[in-house]
Length: 202
Image (cartoon, rainbow, N blue to C red; front, side, top):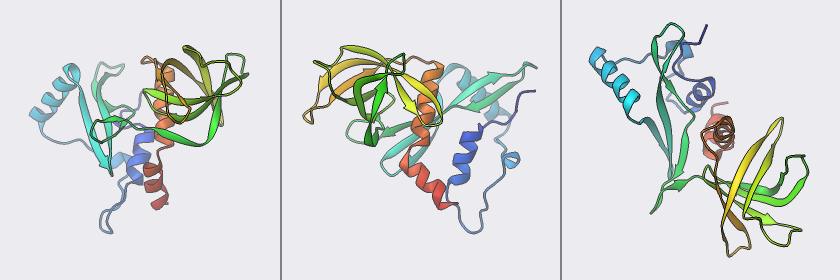
């Protein structure tokens, strides 16, 4: 039987990691209730069915947005469910948050062999790579990013420009697929501020 909880386990773990005052203990998953009256629930359900609904949190200069999805279970009962969040850096122009790598990570080809492209930073919309041992950067690529303890994540890049740091910028062409959701989860798992919150509550 499908779990009727509104939040996924990853999102519940994130909420548990948020700091609370001495008189506000962290709630258990079973204590989470969505309340607001029948008219409010009906309005929210209609909005989720026809419009983009999000729940947002602001951390320093970043915005974390959880999409609210309307799903139907096997008994044809409608539920609201939160999807994986999008993390955006707020500046003069908002842009997807970028994950920098302390040590460049080499991307692999379909056979698991080195590609000559070394990943320096990554966002949900693009990446910066260093080219080693190749005469020129490819205009397009389909490569795989190694993930410790899990399957590699497929990345499809389209060349956009070269930077002053001798790096090459690519735009990601991921569609709404399982690979895209895995990349969103990877970015969430490696977000430093969210991890600091989690460690602070440990």
